[in-house]
Each structure stands twice: as structure tokens, then as C-alpha cells.
Image (cartoon, rainbow, N blue to C red; front, side, top):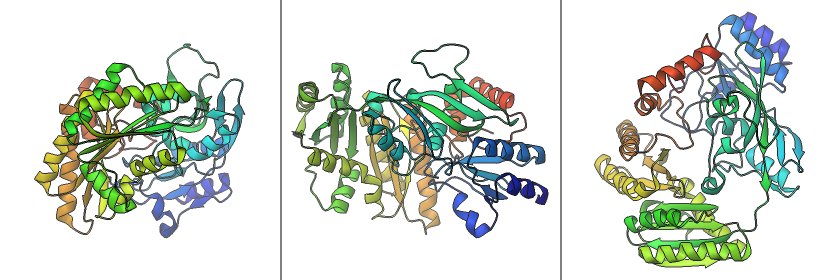
Length: 455
């Protein structure tokens, strides 16, 4: 492989890492269950041309490529395989264009989500996708996994904000997909094909993203419930009423307890807590939250509270965003990602309670109630092999529960290297065959991210 390393060093001006101590952090993402191995090298290109050079060199030498962003993923999709080249896009981090008149931005994949949001806010615009790691995850990773976030209920996931892409194919050619116009139906929708493909079809080097007008400052509602079923009924009723808040989150008892201990506060909640926001502004926001509040009261809420104070709203949202950090007080965490019909959220939460009792581990459920995307999080002792095995069992049982409730194995984290067999169960043999045929058509030698999504 010295010949390949020599080519890479020449093409990337030396931005090639081979020392195992230096490359170690690039071996895996945030998912402890996913397998990973030692790469041959880690490369950090700064341009599309350098990405093309890496792809052509690796293709010629038969060395696989694993594209990677900041490493905030939770499915192992960016994990290294033995002897691969990990292609890290974090140095391609420029916002190339912000076009306020056409409400779009053109960015490189290494741009941090929050940095893009800050850049377009100066123009009175808003980039909606907001994963929990938005302050350090990159747009490239968001595109690869079709990331979501807290605002999905109103604004959709990443793919709903993507107009076009530039992608380096396995041949080293540059494919341009999509458009800069609001509408466009010419040919197959190749843009959506690459969004969510987890680096298995090509390397995204540029994205044209749709922006929205900056929303109004949000008003916030919280509602506490003595019964999980009542909270679930409230969510379903809000949907039926036709109200679309900008955010609607749910926390179960285990999440509430962890956050109260971590933040040293009292959330005045019992079995479940709903947090809703409306960014419609003024009287419209008040009407929306009045409907939500009445629905919660009718469903049996023991307490409701509405505020237009921004500081109070931020504090309440901090409680929701702090769940994973709060759970670290009890041990390491393993977060799952299932999406169920909104009418079955309560069944998922109570099902996770049964799984928790069965495996003898704490499981806290928090998630995006507005779209049914739940994140049951299993807490375990990483020094105990027995607890790790039980955590793995709980993880799989939660996926089975999600499918049994008419849901999907992933709402926003992706399949990666930990849910391959579950993808096969969800989409069936015909769906799996079509996936493989698409992969073979675009990447006939299996150059990109082998072992991710499906074998």
C-alpha cells in the first residue's frame, strides 16, 4: 500500500494521517455497538478535486473508502473497516453562497450545522434541520443520514431542505443533481437518492440548500401527565386538531428523573412531560398553543403552563436537550431510534418499561412526539460484559417493538453497521434486492463504505 499512500500524499499536500495513535479517534462514531477496525489512512481533503483524486487512487488500488464528517453519528455508518481510507470532509467547511432573494445557500459538507444557521440568520433566513448535535455535527453527515431534529414536526428532515448536490462517484466523476429553482421534476430524483445513502453511493462535496424566513420568537407550553397513555392521547389529538407546532417533544418518567437530578430542578412532572413550541408569532402562536393546552387538559394533564418569555422557553427546552447528558450520571448510554405512528407512542413507552424490567437496566424514553420519532436510551455499565450484552438485547427488542407497532427501525439516525439485519426485515427481500442493484449500478466494485446498510 505504499504506492497508494505516496499518491495520496502527493494529491493532498501531505494531509494524510497514518499513525495509529492519530487515526484512532477516526475509527468510530458515537455508537458503541457498531464494529470498527483500523484504517490504512485518514485523509482530510480541502476541495472536490482532492476528493476525486482520493477516489480514483483508492479505486485503482482496490482500497475501500469510508466517508466521514464530525463523527457525531449514532449508527456506526462512518466506522472504519480494516485497511480502508477514511475520507474526512471537515476541512471542506465553507459557506460558499447565501442567496437571500432565492432563499438558498450553497455549502461544503464540512460546515457545522450551527455555523450555517448563524450565517443565514444574518440575512433573516433559517435552515430548519436541527439534530441534537447541531452545535458540532456537519452538513455532510446530516445529508448522509438524512438527519432530523426537534423541529421536524413542522419543517421536515434534511431531505426536505435539499435542492441539489455535487457528488463524487466511484469512477471519480462529478455528478451534479437537482436544481436551484423551487420546482423541478426533470428525470429521476437523484438528490433524494443520495440523501440518506450513508456514504455508500458516493461522496457529497457540495449542497444547495433551501432556506426559510427566520421564524418568530417561540412561545412555549409544557404539560405534565400522571399517565403515559394520557400524554399519548394528547399527541394524537393535537395532530387530529390540525395544529402544527414548531416543536412537540415528550419525556418519560426516567428521563424526567435524570434531568431533575442533573439540572437540580423540579419539572413538576409525573409519568410524562410534553414540551411544545410555536414559532408562528403573536396571536397565531397564542391560538395554536391554546388549542394544544385545551387538548392536554381534556386528555387528563395534571398541569399545563404557557409562556412567551424567551428565557423560560429556553430553560424548558434545555431540560429536553439535556436528557442524554443527564443519563451519564447513571452510566454509559446506548440510544435507539425508532419511529412509530403517533397514535402508538404511549404503547412504545410502556413497552420500553417492560423491556427495562426484563433486562434489569434503566431505559429512558425521550423523543419527537410530533412525528412519532422516539429515542429509547439504555443505560449500562461499560465495564460489565454482562450488562453490555443485556443492553444489546434491549436495543434489539426495542427495534422489534417498533416494527410490531407499525413503525420503522430508524427515524433519523440511519441504518449504519448496527441495523443491517433489521433493514432486511423492514423492507423485505424485494426491497433489499433493489437496494443492492442500485448500489451495484453506482459502485460496482463496492468501493464506498462496505458493510454499511446491507451486505
